[in-house]
Length: 115
Image (tube, rainbow, N blue to C red; front, side, top):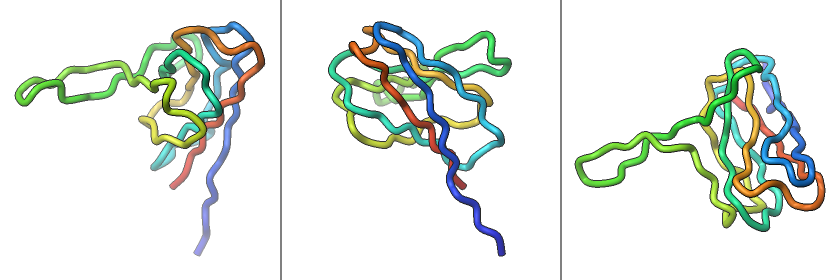
């Protein structure tokens, strides 16, 4: 019986940048998590690509009323900090978008793929 261990991929967001570097997942995972370091302000969006060239925001289905379903950007508010969150999987390439630009230091985010 073989065991699989989570794989960790790191991306950096330079000072003042609105996009991180991109990662290429080696394979598909049952679960994909994002480790979020300390955030001061601004919101984050998950972006994905099929070709590592054109990135688009990942959408999340959220119920906005009792009868309506809206397709909204997968938004991570700045109050979600120093934690792990589960994010939509199914893409090969990912990167992080910041609504306000990164802080005055390079910020490292980690994607963790697990089965």
